[in-house]
Image 1 (cartoon, rainbow, N blue to C red):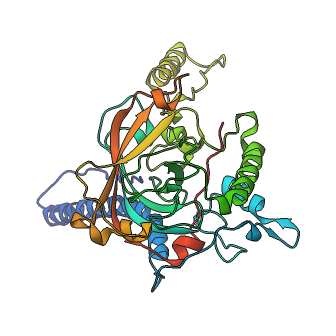
Image 2 (image 1 turned 180 degrees about the vertical axis):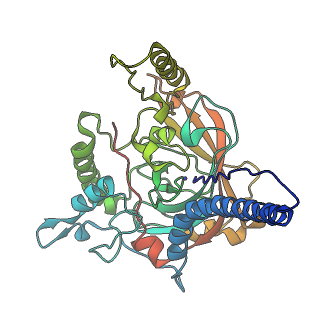
Length: 382
């Protein structure tokens, strides 16, 4: 994420007899101009307010019910089935199919990534690149981010599979959002800090989960792959989540989300009726050619990486949610630098990264809505 109004007036000659009427008419015209100018300015502000409206609504709910103390939700396969129903598979399918910003769980907490911390901030593209849409330089949209770990362990002594889910708000007059996911590793790693772990949309396998959670991890992998195959078909890859769909997004235009090209790429039919003049035919043909010449090809990266700004001090807190609480950082701000890369046959380890922007986080909360209701749609692989 105009309306235009014109008014025509018929001119009449000024005489001594109607001088007063003319002056009054001029005053009315001046007043009309001032009012319409103010209306247009107010409308522009309303458009921006509407774009921020969905973001502010989501943010308000996420920040509405902070915990008084950190919960410790357990990720366990005992919660994956209820009365013979595979609830884990159902939740995985809903994650791939639902675009809702909030959902009502039929379980006490999330079955995966149960413990997290949420942020409000900005997606800011500051570097020129070949990429379009939300990757284009100058793009700046509000975001809600949730950082979490896959399994139950949240402390420094635990193997933490750390990652973030991002919800971008680019559309005016729409609550529709765009979502992406970045992780450090699938199996997790034992580390003192998580903030400085680089994350990508194709994370490394990492270490084996704790022995006590091996069966839980296996069940998760099995059901997530099954759900992904149902939506991505032969291209299914539970280890990879695409980000290229952001390249097709035109800020402020919810319809551009579904098109392969910008709207200018759709040619208009030339007039060929027998009564049409040659001039009209030529004008319409030139219009079609102009539209074809100005259409924008969509180009997005295959890989995206987020890495902590090098000058950021690390915070020594046992639980990752305390570590990431913005009260510990200068200006209460935390930033991850974004880099992008195109596909190559050698894989992500041989990617040629180009810095394109950053994620700037300015507010944080650990809340019930953040953990149990906030929903991020997983984009399918197309």
